[in-house]
Picture 1: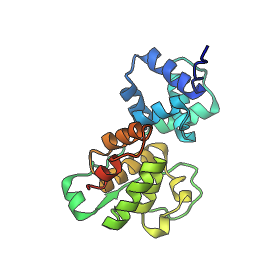
Picture 2: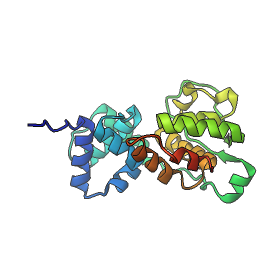
Picture 3: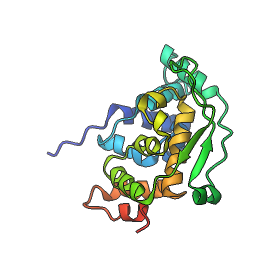
Picture 4: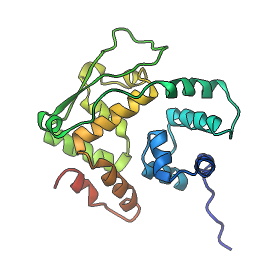
Amino acid sequence: MKKSKKIAPAFERLARLRNSQELTWNQLAQKLGVGVSMLMMVKSGKRNLSEKVMIRLEWMEVDAGIKPASKVSRVAKEAGRKPRSSNPPVVAEDMEKGYFDFKPEYKSDTTMEELPITIRLIRPQPEGTARLGEILGKSFDFDIILLACLDPEIRKEDFLDQLDITSRQLLRDTAMTLVFGVGWRSLVANLAVESRIGPSPVVKRILGN
């Protein structure tokens, strides 16, 4: 008898939270700040949720009455109470200019000095965008896209670690939109599906070929 594939513990928590709150997978993904494709890859064991997403998950579990409060969930809850960023979405004019100015929020316990009030995301040149598309198709690491859009002086993971959860997610989404366009979520979802069945043509569509 064929054994059923074991479901990842993190996905079991996601499913329990979704059912308790009567959410769709898309609604749950939005609340966690990730894509549905990421949740499905967690289910299949191909990806793990980041530490920050796991903290947010715990906060949501506490709010739903599934888990008791802890130090981790209290930190996450404070982050979740912060108002959403006032940054407007990327529009066609920004795409034409090739850059977007973003006002981030930082962690209260940040260890870096002279953090910028405004971050300018700059879309790489076409050849750089092409390479980023290839990397995205293989790694699904959105932080690489974000780092590529930052000024070299702050193009480091230590800087990203100073951002609060919401700002980091919004900044990542903004970079993805600036580089690949407003439809990047659909394209990434297609990448996740097609990568299971062989070489994917979606990378070419991401690059506009």
